[in-house]
Length: 456
Image (cartoon, rainbow, N blue to C red; front, side):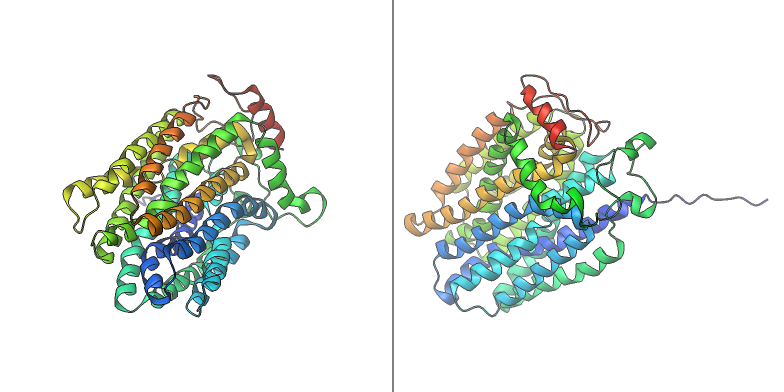
């Protein structure tokens, strides 16, 4: 008797998510680089930490400001095309850095070129992937993809720190460039713009839900309204900026950037080095934050599918603020138990804010949610840029990072209060990316009207 064994098939959405994760990991290699290169650049060129931090700030600003335009360009030209160009810019900027001799070249290569590349595949890219390819499990997938940045830091940070100490920072720059180049073939071979491109529907979608997805199957020809996709990023901003929800999210996420990318990611290693800790050890601690960030962000995505997003944001920001207030008193030449407790606690909270923030953008702004989140993320990077430069200048003038860490901790409590003022209703898997938005618990009625208008 012949027995037929049915081999389960993998939905194409999971393959796309896997390639997106690989791309984010490759791009995150540069995210690991600044923290381990501040001291070597200072020692070789004699540049102050404020000068080096300025180049990092330019990178962070462009990383954020590029995001909403990249989301619009992905609608116009396709995800695969935009992502490939972004990875090429990262490789070019990082590779050219090894030739620099002046501080303005650091701003050009490290700040502008790499900033444009990483910004084109920032978290708005995550929102685009989840919005197009997933009708269910969006929170979980958002958490996994967001954790890709942490995974990149986990993989590359100890490696880069060891290379910087052993063979110099130029070798580390070449590794970053190579990592970006290696990802491009996978993007070209496996990533597709929309489920319709491969004759399928978003994961978990019914027939009606598949018909209501917001993205076209192929990049739109350059004619008619679609030819003005970059203008749409500005028009969506103009509509969203008239709502209370946008400003609550944007201000809160700016503080998120101040307390993570701009401060800890850039200045934790130099701050630990000030207390006598070897850079490879400090880099390893930052990598542990990356490991725990993966766990915390995926867990946050799971929680976002089930609980109130504003309540989650408020809790995340408050816990982060408390941890930053005690950090100045924990730094030492060794990784003692109290410092390890901070690393564990802070790591679980690093970017746990992303899944509920994306969910709230989708709730309030419908199909325009990815572009709106791009602008919210721009505020995150502006905050990070301010923190990167301010912390460097404070260190140059005061001799320590205590004021920077304490100020960031206090701002996190403000972000927690702002988050709790958002509408408490949590979107579920049944919420449609382009559907009518509902608000409750004191949310502006205008939010829903703008969402319907901007989602067209």
